[in-house]
Length: 227
Length: 227
DNA sequence: TCTTAAATGATAGTATTACTATCATACTAA
DNA sequence: TTAGTATGATAGTAATACTATCATTTAAGA
Image 1 (cartoon, each protein chain N blue to C red):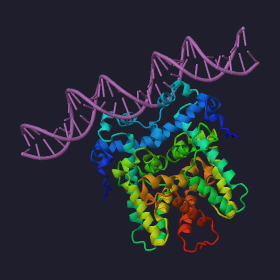
Image 2 (cartoon, rainbow over the protein chains, first blue to last red; image 1 turned 120 degrees about the vertical axis):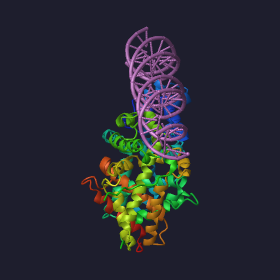
Image 3 (tube, rainbow over the protein chains, first blue to last red; image 1 turned 135 degrees about the vertical axis):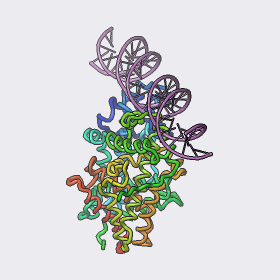
Image 4 (cartoon, each protein chain N blue to C red; image 1 turned 135 degrees about the horizontal axis):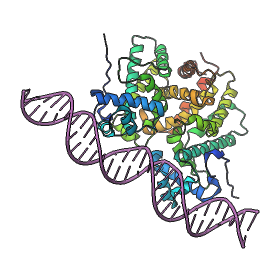
């Protein structure tokens, strides 16, 4: 039995749906490879075209520009992760355990999901760590936000926020704590590997320690026994 | 009495020290204005030259490229803020109060420091919120880090980390908590103003609430009464 | 004060980036 | 069968990110 996983994406993310054609899927496949390899700054549609054996013009028929492509990857990743979260916390009763699960999913090295041919989730995860915040730290945030381009990210944040409220309905900052967890899961990982003195994990560079830090942070914050 | 404030900057941040000449100071002054106005992506040395009434070549004699200039601004800002922290926590005994002071300094709208002619700290603060993380989220982090370009940021983080340890010497993640506070002071502010559903402050858009959130987060984490 | 080096201004030039446009061809859905 | 749609191939443009050269102005030291 071979199962394929398809994620429905917001139409405003692209000019032509890349999932719907061979060329489109190749664009996604190779852009993940290239951005992972040399970073988003170095990435151009010309290089991508060369790598794919296609032409620049062909890529512009799918994506307005490389920024939109990055937002597409970001949106795809967070949609996929929300699906993972739903799957792995399904049937869990204890909201604390659910929260722990999410923290783990956010902080752990991702394995390639074989149900998605053209997307290497492991590399995509690395890309999101380094480039993710560049999608919204721009002059066009508000406009992009109006087009709902960040919806998957915001949805996951809402899911997390609700879990936090399940744990402690009187906690005052569920959404901010949720976005803090999501951002820090990535940023502490980045710091650990690149600016280790900004973390306490420079020695072992073990993502398990990031998870412990985040769990400690979250459960302290929402604990009833605060004094 | 007129007091001028000078911050000694790492030599690797520039080709020629911009503090030492009229042209150099104009570069800093106008680059802050331009980046604040249209964002870092839109900012070019050509536009800067035009704005200043100088030439592109002239600017390249001071800074290798616009990325280095951004790192310079970032380094300057964190050096200045560490100075502010030292000044405002001087003679404070209670480490909890010191921590609160730092959180407030990090999260509050900054006023222009009149002792620095060519730098508008208020605008610079806004720039750091939106563009700051772009200085290190690059392929050249490690290299730039070897050149000590992020030292002021790391120094402030260390100061904060030590305050955390003063409050609770057995807390396990002082550095990671410190970098979390610094990053979140800015990011929650950015979210509040641009992607409010990622925060709990979308209604009032009041930075005082960001401060409350961070204080609650920090003092929960380092509290002895955890259960 | 003279001399010399350093800083600036003015101008030009190159490779790359970020697109847009056009036209031919291949493919595919009614 | 044909009429649209997707792709390929090629060309072209404006802007970006530099580098180089040379004349002139300014500043610093003997």
